[in-house]
Image 1 (cartoon, rainbow, N blue to C red):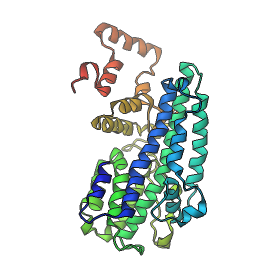
Image 2 (cartoon, rainbow, N blue to C red; image 1 turned 135 degrees about the horizontal axis):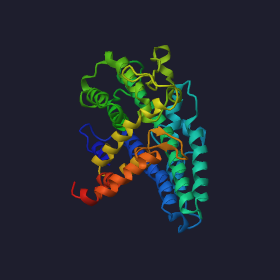
Image 3 (cartoon, rainbow, N blue to C red; image 1 turned 45 degrees about the horizontal axis):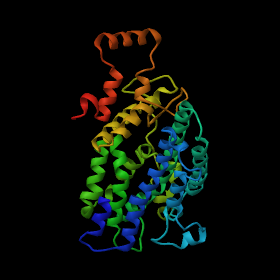
Image 4 (cartoon, rainbow, N blue to C red; image 1 turned 90 degrees about the horizontal axis):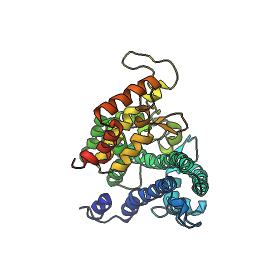
Length: 356
């Protein structure tokens, strides 16, 4: 909302196309994401059993995504109008060599999530929790797909700002700021220095942007695709740039750690657990303590086994061998402190931590 209000009040005056784009990628995008995750929460907390049989939050998410622009011919003719569906279609039309059609993938996954919410009705508490976590994984896959056109728009405007391509509009700076605000915060979770440098160059100092830094910015941004949940093959290459478009090089999963090389397997993926910690801290700073605890308890960046879509800090701290678990319980009993509860209270600002 702050970004939209700033756009309304900017010194350069009202720009209807920019205003429509800002509302679309800030308000509507977030509203759809909220509905997706609401469906998982209402499954897990049992509200689904009390709701009307016709109630399904995924339907609201779909309505926000499609709007009234479902005709491909109409979508292709739209400029600044239309829904997120139209927006994603326009972004994809600017790129080539994409491995997936974002809209087709989102439609398929919305259908699956819609059915999952209906299937959640009448389940036992344990089965409902398991189903809800699977739905949470699906909701994240959809939001990751929704990030693809966001990234494509960022790259399109960065290329325009750098003079790599010609644009009809004489001034794309406001759009560059908009898509920087929409994408760069994800990078801050993975690499604060990269975020700070991009934020300074593309927002604070955009008026004096040095086009010679384009390749460096591209390398940094593409190297952090995993922070935004997208891949090089999903984004593709900007068609207007032709052979001048830099080859995408994502940060590969680490094959060594400061000289230590792990046995091939799940260990390199586990290294991303520090991103869960960064996400937890970010949520706490924003006052979203329940979201922080959800990441702690159910994970976000590390896919794991044991019937859960993700490995988490919380489950890792309790998955102990029987002998080690006995020692843990002995310390808990002797000290009179439930250490897992202490962690939960600290994250959620409850108990002894209610004043922090």
